[in-house]
Amino acid sequence: MKKREFWFVVGSQFLYGQDVLDTVETRAKEMAAELSKVLPCPLVYKVTAKTNKEIADVVKEANYHDECAGIVTWCHTFSPSKMWINGLASLQKPYCHLATQYNKEIPNEEIDMDFMNLNQAAHGDREHGFIAARLRMPRKVIAGYWQDEKVHKRLSDWMRAAVGVAVSKEMKVMRFGDNMREVAVTEGDKVEVQTKLGWQVNTWAVGDLVKEMNAVTDAEIDALVAEYEANYDIATDNTAAIRYQAREELAMKKMLDREGCKAFTNTFQDLYGMEQLPGLASQHLMAQGYGYGGEGDWKVSAMTAILKAMGEGGNGASGFMEDYTYHLVEGQEYSLGAHMLEVCPSLAADKPRIETHHLGIGMNEKDPARLVFEGKEGPAIVASLIDMGGRMRLIVQDIEAVKPILPMPNLPVARVMWRAMPDLTTGVECWITAGGAHHTVLSYDVTAEMMRDWARMMDIEFVHITKDTTPEKLEEELLVKDLIWKLK
Image (cartoon, rainbow, N blue to C red; front, side):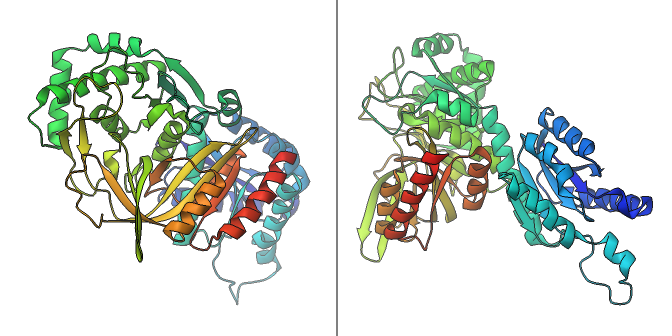
């Protein structure tokens, strides 16, 4: 978030005289400064735009300014929208139209025609909104008083989604080996994804990782193990397994950072030259903001990194997840989410424990160390990006995470339990009908509205399963969307 900023472009015109323009500029600078105090990124006043050239120039500058993650527009006075056409048509950054006004109330004694000419956002924002609708532009419209907390929250969330777009455009995914054999949903068109979302998804040999592991020093391992001991409870005597995970983590991080990758995948079917599947290693990397996908699932890996960036500074909780099993007792229907090893400790309700257990799947020569914990309680979402062939579909489901209703003392992995919306069985039917994957990103920080905004900015299909969703309504929605997206 600290690397990004948003540009505040205010609309007006010469018709009202220089005094009005000076007032508009003064107020716009004040608003940008005050809003910057409560938003996750600075809102930088750029210009009171009065001509086609001013607008086109500031948009051109925004497009090529890496720190600019989007623009926020507002029309203090009437701003004829034909002069916005060239600029908006060339805009390549996320765009939010803030429909507000400087004053909160109509001043009964002061209001006259001079006041009306200056304070006519109700007039100007409608003209501005028309041209974006006419151009069929993806945008966010936020209406309300600029000092209200509700407006701050919605603008903050939109900014976070826009940061997710910036992160997506820069995303590089390092795949250690290929996908798990014969799995369909983890596949996808990498060329289409790079064209649409900006992701660069490539493969590195597991043998190259093993070479990097062999070059890790004992001193480096000692330092990382000390970090483990500071952050986690050690609940195993098998220090060799912990040190091996540290070796794997250090090697993977060096390769990721060297290549500029913020996400990675591996698969238990390809551990050439390795003794253990990275468990603790992958978990601790995720805690540092890297995305991860099991079984070679590069789509969920990249999405994990993107949601972590979008949720930065929040509850600290977005992570790779998998639906594992259900509790189907009537009135107590829950999903149990987990994975073999790799659940991010940002999801933990309490201090995680490092444990070592046998992993009865894959090519592990020795028992991998991993973090074991229960997940946090509270409202959350699970998100799945799937390739529908010719287009991407983002599926988001609202959930309510709970303290696990059973202690499950013999389950040697991290776990999160939740109540799916609208209820477990209906939610499962809707998820399956939409084609949702078994791998998801679970987030306590990122909301469904933020993901809808992100999907709109990326121009991909969005499906939201809520407390009000029914299988019948969803089937109709998917049929209509299928027709629409085939026509696009």
